[in-house]
Image (cartoon, rainbow, N blue to C red; front, side, top):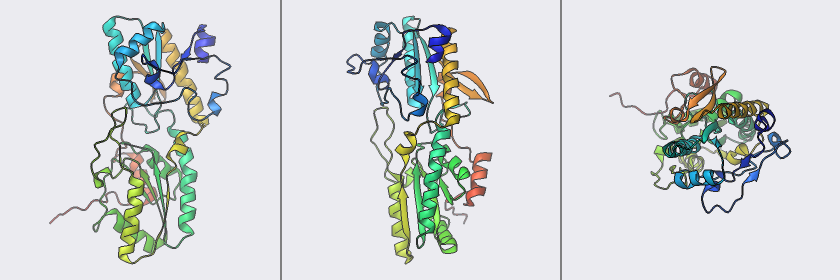
Length: 345
């Protein structure tokens, strides 16, 4: 925002409340006029002064009508996969109508699931906030008889928060992510490896992404306002399964389950993310004022680049199970590469 104001002299900057829903025809939320005084200390606050909400992005006719009525000629969208898919659809409608409205995207998703960028804004802060939670889970587990600290973090289809937290806090013994399916029971299943760890070391810490192990639960048919499948709570499920398994085995355990997901998401940005976000915003302004559109600002090979939005949302970014990040996680946790049972007979 300061770049628009001070570099280019733009004085009418409108903040849209609650995402695309704030641009719908019957939106009850007025726009918020943005100026340097309002955003002066924004980097010290968690969350968003504009609010966030799912849905609305598919109603592109209404949204583009609103942009025309409000005489907006630059739309900057800040969000993840769903937000940017909506941005691309809006761009297509703008293009169809032959309007001169620029659409620029800024990646903000702690899942880090956008393609072709090094990192999304918020990932570093999420890891920083998850580390003390894992440390606390380790303390609780170590101080209990056969204690098991179980922590769930966000990550629907990409386990970057869990993977990076496992490297930042070496107390993690099992890192369960969506990209690496596992079995519960059986000689090579997760519960058997957890049993061995408990009997060998007396305690364990398990870090799980919200999207991990969904194949172990009944298939969900519910969707949220953005069309995403509503996942079952893998944390509660694992807590119950671990408790039942060790009871059956006649081994006393104390499971300490922590779900800090929304505490992590609502935290103020750390120094790295504050710098990164400010620079993403400045590059978005320069791109828009240069007349560019349908692009995402991202960093690739330590350079800020313009990526077509369509390309960035064409597929999700996943933890590469053959890559260096996951290799380092396995070495740090010393968990097996696979916890699936295979019949080689």
